[in-house]
Image (cartoon, rainbow, N blue to C red; front, top):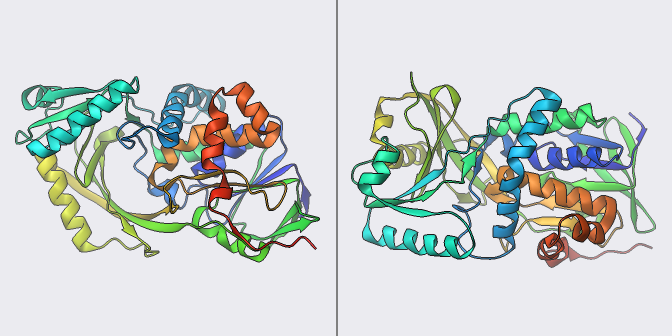
Length: 386
């Protein structure tokens, strides 16, 4: 495998697949490399929540990126369905964040005030009206924050559709192909070495999350990332047991097609272990049953764990790593990779093909996001181009 293309995207999760897809739409010749299977890591373990409001509780670049990305999903889902024939399972039925105590209720009511100030839709429902809207909810709640614009997708299907769409637009998608080395010449990227050969390129995009450090270290560049293990389980019912995503402290419940339900998720920083722990599952099950007692009647399906890539300041790295021309990063989206995938793909592809000026022209205001997410804020470098 000795190829020559414009751009090599390293990492076939939802972020890398989205960037490859958007680059192909802009006419770039692209190779997408994945060391395992497309969507085989964090993207395949995700519940697929599009929680632009439920995840962000203060103004800032993450809140803006999340809302931008959520707004892109309906058109993206239609576009991918038309191009690939694949359904991403986009559902926009809203979310209920339940309060079991007066203190919980006060926090949610404060969030509603913030959401209104930011121009978002949010509503406080007392227990009676919340349970009328979602009969599966516990009658023990004090009330719930209703976020009608939240939704979810089928995470593995979204990733597969993006990769397939990219392929149909000319991207060479290569699975089981680990990138071994970034090749440079006079301070710029000139290729990527794999076990199967060398791919010559003008740009390389690092979207391999926790495994990107292996490629950066030989260049004398470090982008700090650490894993946060998340454990989940799924249930099945003969008929759908709930209509909307439900959340409370330390637990979410996401209904999927065919009566399937995903329950998550724990958060264990620093762990690379992918085995779910019994104690975690028991705790999650208790929280889920408290939130929606009807789950006691559901059948157990399976358990799994994923590793979410987190940055020290909680913001992803998106943009060019200035130590080497043509080297870009799209890393550290933590547990919001699915939600942020559409905006990240558009932002990164626009920046790669046209620079910050193109971002400002095509996505007014988004150039400020690139400034906030610039890799330079986290780079530790000892680089010599001699």
